[in-house]
Image 1: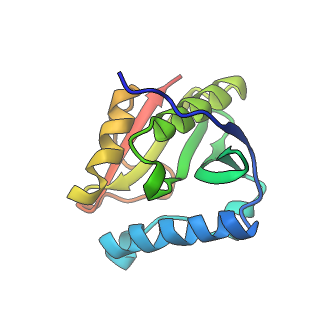
Image 2: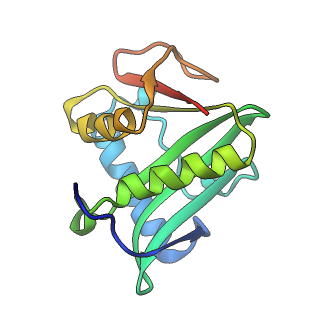
Length: 157
């Protein structure tokens, strides 16, 4: 079993310079793999909406990862914008961020936590992370539509 990275997870500002840079890298990756009509990654301004809480993981003040929780309704939230800096991957940071989002969603009383990610090979590590946490394939939810470029997953809380 891999060790989980040390560091502090806290609510963060998506418009902070280092957070914005990491979100821009996330957008570049996601949009570089996905046709425009199926690119659903949110930019920093969209992540500043009242329905979204953005979390960061920092170690000794250095930003290593971000992940967001978006409220869909009183019982349903969505995982958004999970991204770890390349140099910090394979250290359990993504798993730790996902576990944090799950814990926050449970604490907020949500009954379902869902996500959309790419169906292409580049997104296979993300799909494996989510499946390992208990997420299962589901139909499109919210405003998503069925697409061969997207994989939809949900976790009953």
